[in-house]
Length: 189
Image (tube, rainbow, N blue to C red):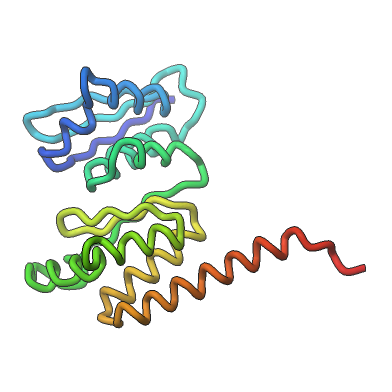
C-alpha cells in the first residue's frame, strides 16, 4: 500500500535535512524505508512509502523526523523518532499569545532560561529533548518524559516562577527514581 505525506518546513532548515552530500536525507530514507522528494525553492518535502516498506507508519515517522528538524532539532536528535516509543510534540506559542511577538519572545526566554539553564534542567531531569524555534517549543521523548516536560513548559507559559518549576522537576525526578527502585524490590509474600 502506497502512502504519502507533504510537509512544508522553514527554508533555512532545508540544508539541514539534506545534509552534507545528501547524507541526512539518505539516513532518514534508510531508517524509515521512505523516499523524500525535496523542493528546496518552496521548502516542501514530499514523503513516499517505498514499496518494500513493511511498516505502514513509516511515512508518519519520516514526517515527524522532518518536522523535528524543521523545528530546530539536530538530525541526530530527530532520528530518535524512529523508535516506536519516542514521540514529537509541538507547542505553538501563537495559540497562547496570538501574534504578540513581545509576549512570545518573553516566554521563549523563560523556557530557555539564563544561559540555557531552564531548558537544560528540563532536559536533564526528564530525558526529553527540547527545541525552542520560531514560535514553537518542541519536545522529543517517550510518553512519560513528555508529560513531565510539557507540564514544566506549560507552567512557564502560565507565568509560574522558575523556582516553582524547578521544584516540580526535582520532585518528579525523585518520584521516577523511587518507581525504578521499587521495580527491583522483591514482591511481598
